[in-house]
Image (cartoon, rainbow, N blue to C red; front, side, top):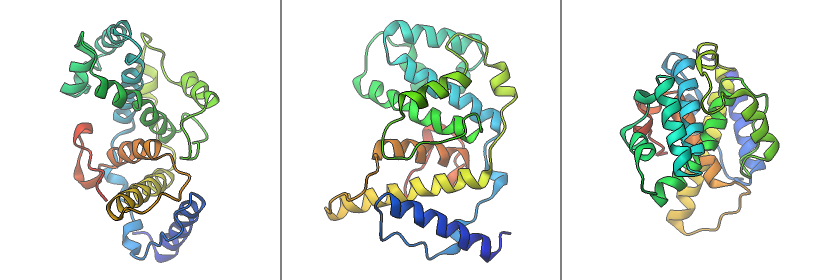
Length: 224
């Protein structure tokens, strides 16, 4: 069990980051909220598989031929059964579903934060903008290219500090809470946060630590 000093230090770091983003009134009063259970986290290997899947789905939004290439890749690498039924349907369909195409194009941001959680990249950009070209290049250097072997990436996967992952999750969870509140009360957004980027991180990291006891990707709970 983490002691009060550790929790207070975590509280200070998270509140400081939120204030830098413009959420000035965010105060964490309930210290137990800042505790996490490392035993609930997905295995690094499962996270590595999901990282590859999200990357592949984002790649597949480029064209129908990209879909075919990604589907063939996932089947070859024995990842097909790790996709949800909706993801399988998207990759198998001749038709272009605009809403799914937009959703899966954003999957790249989820892949980036999961890749970071696996300590494959050193830095994670702030949630004020979409990933930069240099960030994309860094990501592509360490993720298997479409069609290549995924064996080493999956088998050698290891987490960075679970505390760092948890804190990143809470920052984005509290950002989601902020955006929910301003929508309910009709107040203006005074932050510099890109809410789509933040939401993708919130969802991905909730899945990593099985927030609410939920293991399946399509069932991830992002309520706050």
